Image 1 (tube, rainbow, N blue to C red):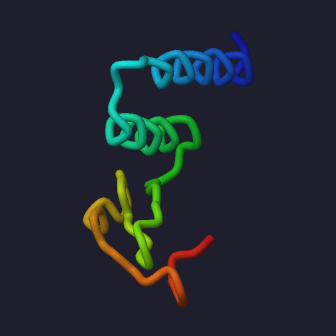
Image 2 (cartoon, one colour; image 1 turned 90 degrees about the horizontal axis):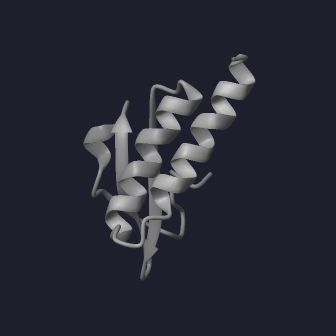
Length: 81
């Protein structure tokens, strides 16, 4: 199997995994960051969500995992991207 075909196969597996109706929102975002690192070969990943006037690091893995739960103001957020 080619590298591209293997990556596509893995993406389809992740899509099926994330479509499980029994998953909580927290479980979904945790799986997203872990699978993103696996698929991209990245040193880390995180998901930020907006809660009121704050940006919250809701999930993280790899490089920067200790930042999980940190809150930053949406206005002037140094993490926007």
